[in-house]
Image (cartoon, rainbow, N blue to C red; front, top):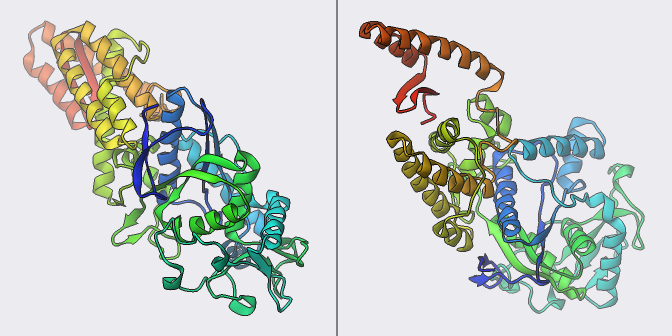
Length: 470
């Protein structure tokens, strides 16, 4: 395999070599479901869906794990505000998240574990860390268990920081810590917290810390060592730094590559519920931008770049996708749907170069321009060849408009009605042209244009598209 990926741990682009030939294990940090997802969250799912599809295109069998954090300080705070049990709030938001993934064409994870389903694995890791001198229960008997940062010599290597320069960990009170930078593996129950949010443990009733949750789920589903760990750049520190420390201190090989995506910003800040600058998928769709066009918007940027969101940029992306979609529909009307063919070498080279989807889409648009020229010239043989390549490229990106995921969504239930009405108008135009009544023929065309329907005369006869689909 010729794929090269940027590895955060080595701060370099590395050849990707699977641990086991023909197989890949991927763990993506999923969401903490204290609320519905916004489009910043959804970028992560689409970026790693493209990575997964590319790995599978290469013939690799991918085990893809994307977790759900359903117990956390934020979940408890939001459930208290809403006056509902934490598990009820978490499950409701998990269902919304699953719906949004499906609408964006994100493939189902191989497994999508919840943190609350893996308490025994967390206890096993914590017990081993204590036994090996890397963790300790709080001396004051509060039930907290902390990871001893000083006991792990490579702490800070992922984020390229020195422990002496780090601020204290804020994930738990410093009441029983030996060092303020030590982080919580287990949080003892506190007065006023719901009993349903506590589990028995060897150190007293409580709940897991955020970081130990992911280490336990990686271990459970991918074993001692696996290929790729993914997440947003905002997770490098402290979350992923802490995952590495506790997992390797426990004797696990853990992740061999660390792949992080850039954030989606609103203005000068990342999109965040705590700031309040969020836009969700229903709002995007209500504005007239389809889910497939939002997926294209994410894919058009290299996964490691920051996306500065604007409505104008999103609509430009939607128009760009419509041009690709328009060619596919026009071509299939003439030569049939055919079958996706081989990927162009330039497209493969771009994707193998650290998933350079921006360059890959440039190759795709060049192909569509050549296909449109062939349509205009009536060269059906070239159209067939280009359509085959275009569908192959769109398919591996999860964007093929003829895929059942997207087919029929461009015009909704009104599309057949519009088809019939426009066909009737075009028949009237054809009759006017036949009797050389050019004024009447032009009037029909102009009325259609005023309604947003563009009529194009081709060697195969007139065809129409909605304005913006060219």
